[in-house]
Length: 192
Image 1 (cartoon, rainbow, N blue to C red):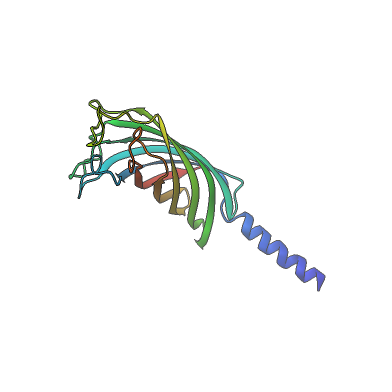
Image 2: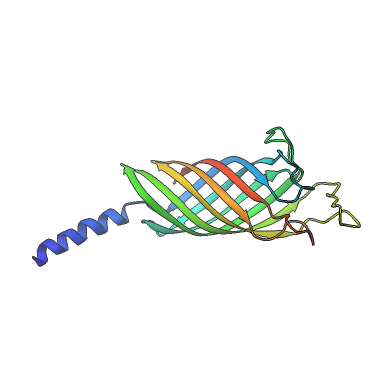
């Protein structure tokens, strides 16, 4: 009986370890952002942009650490047309958290999810700066702000496709409420 139990544990352990290996994923994609502040995001409009990034999966398996960085080129002022390459703001997002293999779909095919924290550093912003109705002078962008990220992804061999949602925790504009940015990002990448 003990022999069968050991064989069963060995099979289960080897399946869990091979569920998803650690490695690096290089990604690129399109972003769609919005905020609650009408001075930033007008009704029916959004902040469009593109991104490139790298995520490292540490300690592969069903649960793994994710450490990564992304460069986002987006717009501070909302537009009604989805022009992803007419941008005026550069952001570097440093991300840290956990990733999970939700379901193994087949040979080297996985459904994944993640829970991450993100520190978003504003590297360059537009000029002129946004003006708010209750502000005496144009507002300044904060140097950084925080976000919480979740998403769902699919891995097939070396190919990754992800849809992430970042919820803005801190305001992006100095002393202006409701200026936290939320982002939807659709990414495709290659993992090694």
